[in-house]
Image 1 (tube, rainbow over the protein chains, first blue to last red):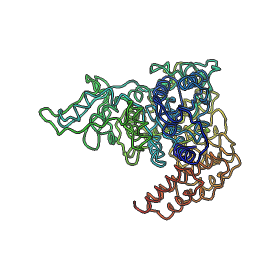
Image 2: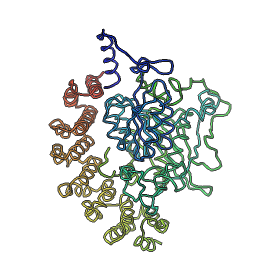
Image 3: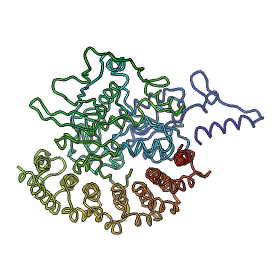
Length: 403
Length: 232
C-alpha cells in the first residue's frame, strides 16, 4: 500500500470504525515519532561504508519508517537489519540480497542507494520505474550515457531523485558566499584538483568469500574472479578498493570530482550547464585541462601551481549579491531529500545537477585517455564529429543487466 | 615495444603485471591519424583473439577493440557471442563499434543463442538503437522466457521509433516485471514521438496508460504526457 493510499485507508478506517479500537502510540505518533501515515517508508540498497552512514541518517529521522535493507554481503545485510530492529525495538525489518525483490514492494516510498558506482544507473532507473523516490550516493554515473537516462526516468514518473554529495554545500561555504555575494566581480575561472583516473583491474584470483553474492556484486560489470581488494569499499583509489578500477568507478576523478566539481560549479553558478569544450594541455609542468562553458566561464583541472577551488575573479569589480540556494527541511542533505519527498520539490542536488557535475569528470577522463582536446554537444550528449570519443560514451553491460 | 606487448599478451592472466601491455594503449593514441598503423594494430588484436590466450587477455583485447575496432574485426569478435564466458566482452567490442557490420553480427547471433546471452545481445541492439532489429524484437516481446520479453521491451524503448511503439502496443505481458518494462518503453517511445511532433501517436500511447489498473506513477506520467501533447 503506497503512502497516500495508506493515508486514505487510515482516514477511511478512522471514519467508519465505531467500535472500540486500540491504536498504538507509534501509529498515532508521539513525542519522538510522527504519525505512521506521515512517515516516509524507506529502504536502503548497498549498506557498506557510505550506505551505513546514509542508513543512520535516515533511520534517525522521526518522519521516516525504515522497513528493509538490501546488500549482497550477508554480514553487511544482517548488521544493517539489526540496526533497524534495534531502533524500532521489533523484528520487522526485512533483508534482501537482490534489490529487485526490494523494489517490487509497493509499500516502500523511497530508497537510498550506496552501491559501487557501476550499479547506480540501473538501480535509480529501476526504482523510478517502480514509483520510488531515490537518494543516490555520488558519483551518480559511471558513463556519460547513463546520466540523461536517469534524469529521464526521474522526470517521466515525477520522482524525487537526489544525488548524494553533502560536501557541495557544506564544505565550500566560504568560496560560495564570496562568489554569490558578488565580492569577486565577474568570475573568469576556477580550478579543481582531484585524484587519479581508475584503471583496468587485474588482481589475482582469490577464493570467493562465502559472505558475498559475487555474481550480483559484479552485476553489469565484466566478469572477474573474486579478490577482496577488488570489491573493498575502502575510500582509497590506490588499487585496494573498487574505487580504483574502471569497471566499477571513475577513480578519484569521479569520486572526488563529484564533490569538488560540484562545489566549483555551485560557486560559479553553472550547475545547470555542461562544458562545450575540453582543451588538453601537455606542458612541462604537467598535463592538465581547461573546460569552457557556453557562458564563457572556464573550469580548469589540475592547473599547475593552482590550488583546489582557486578562483580568478575580476579585481576591483563587485557584483550584485544573489541569495545562495540551500537545503530544504532540516537535517542537511538527508533532510533536504525527505522534505522534497513530502513537497515534491527538486532537491538541492537534483539528479540533473548531479549528472552535470559527474559529466565534467567523465569529459576529463576521456580527454586524458585520448590525450587530446574535445568538443562536447550537451544537447545531443555526444562529442562533435568525433567517432573515437563517442565510443567512450558508454559500455556494454553484462547480461542480464540492461538500462 | 609493441612487439613485446603482444608477446606479453600471450601469458597475460589475472595477477600478471599490466604495464607490459601499455604500448598497445600508446599505439592506439599514436595511430589516431595513421590509418596504416591503426589497421595493423587492429589486425594484431584480431590475431591475438584467435589464439588460445587467457580469458583475461581476451577481455583486454576486446576492450581495445571497443576503442578501435572496424568492420575488419567484426567476424572474429562475433564468433565469441555464443561463448558463455566471452559473450559480454564480445559485445563490449561490438556495441560501440560504429560499423554496420557490427549491428548485423549482433542481429545474426540472436537466433543462435539462448538466455541469458540472448538478453545481452538484445540489450546491445537496443543501445545501438538498431532500427533494423525492431521486427525481431517485436516477436521476442511474447517470448515465454520473461527475461527475454523484458529485455526486448527495454531495447524497443531505447530504439524509440513509431514501429517500436506499435510493437509495444501489441505486446501481451503476463509477468509484472515485463509489464513494467513494456510500460516504460512505451513512455520512452511516446516522448520521442512527441519530440518530433508526432502528437497523435504519442497521445494514443498516453491514453492507453491512463487506466485504473495502472500504478499511480504511471498514470501521472501518462497525464503529463497528454498535457504535453496539448501544449500545456
